[in-house]
Length: 392
Image 1 (cartoon, rainbow, N blue to C red):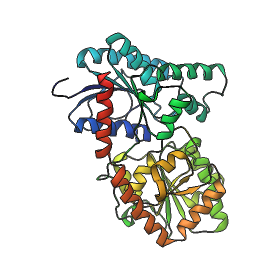
Image 2: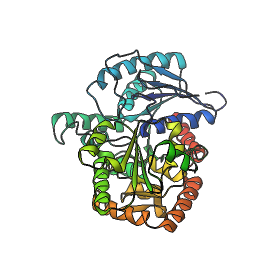
Image 3: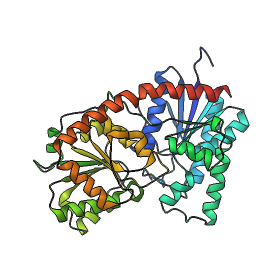
Image 4: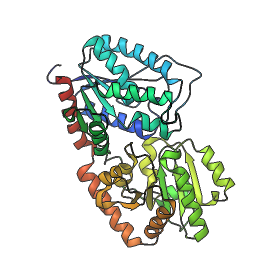
């Protein structure tokens, strides 16, 4: 370490960058550390695209693996072996004084790098491994694979020098359920670049996307799958169609083909515009088309980074009533009963029909996010955590 600067090797066992929430956190954390004067080198899979200003090293190409969407895969073990080999060579070349591992697979590799090179390990934990694989219907609770992954999760949690979580509830879960000492756990919520994500005029975007004129628009941005609540969202659309309430739904994210076909089969495709995958850099402009932003996410273990983007763009936010969503939105959010499509639709209809409430909430969420959730402030917290981990 020279002049107090850290050299940080960041492990990302994922096809970085693929325009989804997990990758946004990785990107923003790397960028925040670089802006504060530290050297960061990211080691990741062969897929994805390089992001400006983030030095990135990739494993050799694996032509048959092309999965960009979130979720577990049985291909990942051999990809992670390749990632470990790449990380070994980068440690020797880069000589970091901190291993910064994302996700449990990255932390598992980081444990072995720590043992070989005696370098401290910081683990950025974005949720419970076993809860995630159950949410994705990858394994059944209590099955042999489930018990194996649970053992890996406990092994990793017990050997990181410091664990960052993306929410307060996740930090409490590590302490209370997994027995990790509180001194080794820090909550570092996601943040947002409030200069990039800000309110924009939406009429041009609405014309560009051929959205119906004179009809309010509800926007969703993120990965499209069951635990993000897309099945519930389709139920909400059907409720609005039955009631005849004027509202159009703009759904931005991937993989979208399955849900687009379902919307056609269920006769609600006229109410929904699916954009497919969008570039993260275009997200602020496209979000401007929305009068209300939606997050029907039903995972209780993961953070909900899209809420920060919604807030920064000055859009009223409707989400399920969970500890994580309450922690982010506070009194500026509108909440529906967890997992209840009918209540979600009722709260959404109230928002759609009350222009004054929407304007009030729009101002409130923007003020809240600028004051409490910018990456400028998060960067200082992150730097402190990295210095603490490196000192161990």
